[in-house]
Image (cartoon, rainbow, N blue to C red):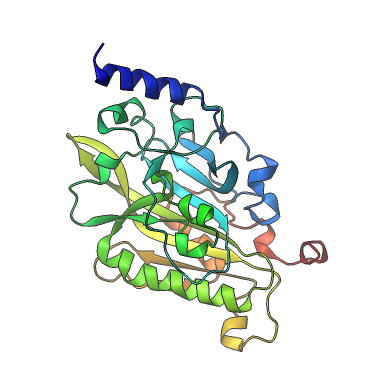
Length: 294
């Protein structure tokens, strides 16, 4: 038995002991990342899988993942006050839970390249993002919106990234992430819930003449913070308790437009597969006494 065969058996045994965290409904631990514990409404499809993103023994955020297009439809997370620093020493990870069963249901670093085919049917792999000039791996839950090293590390899974045009990723969208981080750092007094997602229109990254990864047409994001500084300048106060944005994933014409959550929902109803009941935040992020007392 050669070393390659031994390694294959070892990895298969390791992945075979991993408990699935793909869930029909998010567990209570995972619903903590959703406003009032409720996921966005009006997104139903057999190819969409709910992932509770776990790392180092703890749930970190949740993702709705398309196992056909091999990209996240959205990631939902709670914002953590931070200085915006990035964690650069983490290897890219994948989700054994999409392809195998597992004891921990945790994301894992990618094994050697020749083993990727064992789970590439249901998710993107590193080869899908290699040798492509125009696109980068763009986070939906960005590490600069997290503070703890483990929360930052957990964002480096391919189930949390989409192909972003490089100029858009490092330009308009990155500046938008900075703006939101500074706004929530300064004026959100309680928990800020963020949902960031994509729309698609059929464009794909192909590998070996096979459609592998959908290329987003738009990226969009919305936040909800019901406990905010009522004495903030009007220009900032007017963007609470909730606000949203979208941007075109292109080299040109990709300015990010800030809009109300209702305007974003109307935009998505016209530009993606959500149904008429689509709602990002329960009751449109309306504050009430019970929420404010949490």
